[in-house]
Length: 253
Ligand SMILES: Cc1cc2nc3c(=O)[nH]c(=O)nc-3n(C[C@H](O)[C@H](O)[C@H](O)COP(=O)(O)O)c2cc1C
Image (cartoon, rainbow, N blue to C red; front, side, top):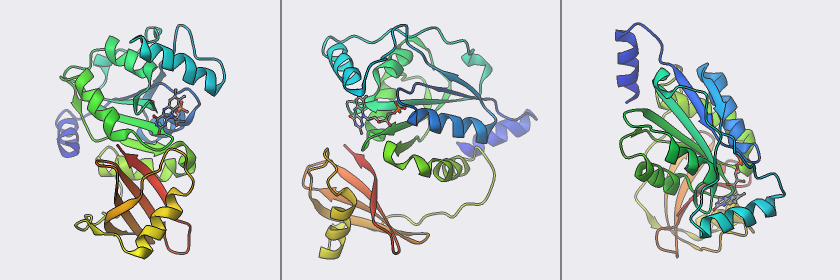
């Protein structure tokens, strides 16, 4: 897809026009949006609510839980960007309740991305990239949705490096990057690998699962693992860099 985009832009002798459109409640998704904007020279617009969630974190959880239970979505203010002006739209959101946050789900309901090329991005406490994209595809079946990027809020410092790699991999910006090997086939995790998993997951309150099988691949300075767990379908990506504490990068549910 990246190649097609570049070919199209070469043929028309113009650089693609990018829009970064996002919702962010506590500024983590905003940090990704701003990095994308900077690296792409994109236009940027924040989705805002008629009635913002302006209370504490707990109040946001409570109000959004009530709205979810009632099947309601919060009303968004009209956006000023004209989607037709753009070749690619980067659409960002936090993960709430395992999927796209309600304000961004509102935007997906109101906007029409049919025929548009969309790159989803998100931030989360532990995960939700895959489930969010699945729901995105269901909400906008006629959009051309490309692979997305997601980052844990606890790893905000990783955003510049990861966004750089993500944009190069997708062919949105030029530059060298090291291609990672494919993951090995999954096999039962050794005791040492289980210890790496346990150290990475630590006492994270939302993760109770135990490691079972694992696939791995070398990455610069260490190893990346993809652990299966005793909960069917729940997998956890863990990075172990030489001499550093291992950490998890996302949970797939
Ligand atoms: C109402 C609500 C529900 C959330 N649900 C999840 C969840 O299901 N899974 C998760 O990993 N993080 C969850 N989070 C954490 C946010 O996804 C995380 O803090 C994110 O980085 C916030 O992005 P923002 O700063 O752009 O608003 C939730 C946060 C809120 C406020």
